[in-house]
Length: 210
Image (cartoon, rainbow, N blue to C red; front, side, top):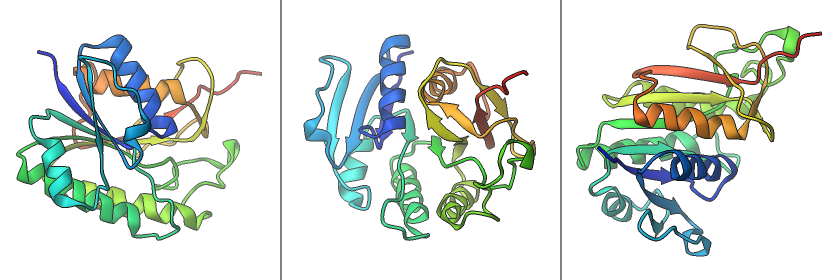
């Protein structure tokens, strides 16, 4: 069955990678949600655009009608440690109202202090207060009744699809992630190739062997 996917943050770096991967590798129909969606060129027959602020509950609920999966590539841009958590709460509320259970939500590597010193632990939350908003959003998602998967990419770089996937209680082996790998993992989650319900997946480039 071809799925309907609501892509939040569709115009950002990660959102764009997810969009292109889903278009090229699946037959899903995408609803592209962004505050700047009117600047996007939807693929006829495959994409619909919805220009809205996620905090606008009625607009978000309208965009969610008929969706099977919600993928969030939202980010916090104003320095407010509670902003991403607030966005997460808005997404959860709208999904529950629309009876949608499947959520894939991007946060960031480091929220569990899972980056070892050997690869550079500066982005662990204990060392980088900017990670607090990702941690708070993750806690909101984890406390929900949804069939969620959290994604924790590292610093996004260009490069080939090559990714090591780790789980909530595992250390990562690198602190960078190819943006193309985010798209690849999104495809695998949405098509059911990876289950990962109620899991938190770390995504990193394989370590370079010397």
